[in-house]
Image (cartoon, rainbow, N blue to C red; front, side):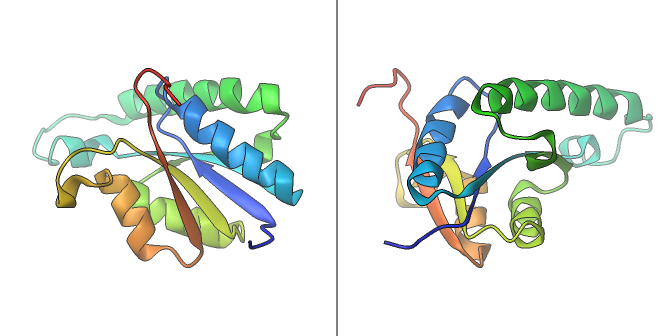
Length: 148
């Protein structure tokens, strides 16, 4: 098994994020590795196609503040320092690749909802992270009722 030095855990800030964090944090502890959390917010302009003639800046800032609060709530109890809690705006898979490279992460941990069908085996973000990563990627299967 590889000796990981820096585990980057990508979370979507849903209730299921704890499952991804538990797996990633356990691997980091076994390897005495640094842990970072990352959440990627898609720009609102992407969600609305950029066709709406309105300023979405204040809404984007509110989403950013909410995400920072949520990621701090997840990272705080695990003593993950503030400078290792990243909220970034952009296309999630490419931004996760960028932060992994910048932070020299050697393992990215993401959640997978395990949807049916070959093309839906992983979620779109998980698939994008897997295919473009320059390091190992662990896809954690999300359990709706946290059954093991």
